[in-house]
Image 1: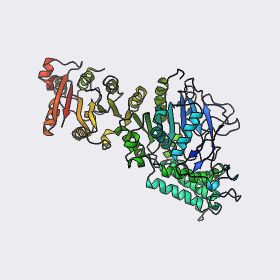
Image 2 (image 1 turned 90 degrees about the horizontal axis):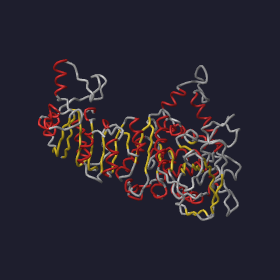
Image 3 (image 1 turned 45 degrees about the vertical axis):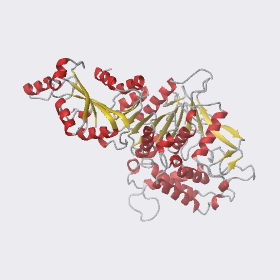
Length: 385
Length: 196
């Protein structure tokens, strides 16, 4: 795939790299003296630079959100279901930017990059980055691309948290915010899952306290295990049941610890595949960024007080079978926005896919997204500033 | 705009906070946002209606009112509205309590089942009336409670609810002196503006 690029695809895309030499002071107290961000764009920026949409990625996401890098690619970008000509995020109307966050492992500066001060890979010494740091770095990328105000900033899950932070930190720099399957902060259970994931990585003997590359090693067992755990939380019990049930490998029980059930095989495959494309230190960093995010902490837990700064219109979407970030978590944001008197619409979408639903082309979800963005597009200024 | 909605419009002060329960495609709310600069939200569960609201830029939240309104703080809205929907909820009496908890004032419109034609239909044919306003059979109707202008007034008295004003209109949504004089018999739609 693809023999032919589908008509509603953005086609072949080439990632670009932006280099930043203005030091970035991070929440953790450390400073990155220079760094780079890798990003892709789809569609065309209009003359007044008013039609840009920023896509914020989730935990294991990257800059490749839509289209193909080459005709030999087996799969398009991670959110190709939503981004393209005529799709919910319509690239005939919008100029879409997707990037890999700082601390990532797909081309932006992160643990696998070389620390210019030591000439060595950062690995475990890469500072912990937060959602706030990401938003700051994304704003600098917007500056570089000549975008003062985004028509919309869109994100699911951890991406939704970045959107929320944007609306608070840079209220005049976005016209609208789309927050999908997200939460205003992690629950204790969410943090607990993240900690188990991190511990499974840290306790892998191949982890070497995070300096595994310098030790010619990869903590595949720990990272694979972390992903298996994560994967379970992204699906719903119903979705897993429908896909695998109690389907077995053999006709009868083997009474050993090999693969008996198909779901075991699936999880092992998912875990292993993930270790080939993702870095363990990045996984640790990203889960930490999730844990730390809590914008209401600055207003003593009053989410509506901190959201009173926002000036954009909001669309929130949740999915009925999502238990990692359940609809109630999205509704916390909705209720806080209503309390603060902000413009917000909310759709709770029937879906069987669990948390992963935000990546599926569920018709009602795509329609809501498209309807909201179509109106945003119709209100855009087109004159040159 | 439906003229019962026009009547409501006259009663609404500008620049207030409005919650419209079961807002449908958001006709009234859109009008109030545009012309009265209200800060308004609609609640709706109909998918097409939700989408229509989103397309018009009306803030709308998908929420099942029968599952409760606990997410809204006491007296957090100046006005809570419900047009032609009260008869569709499980416990209208408790819903009115909730509306008056959330809103300083409420405006409720409902079809008056005491209208002479409804009475006549039931008396002569012995069957539940089907009309333009209530175009459903008894088994597929979303309207699960039938009550009259008088029933509503009585409920307000029992609950010590103040009726700030009321209006009663016919099928063409016009008010006439004879409807005003005997609203229970002649009104097809009742409009109540109430508070605690």
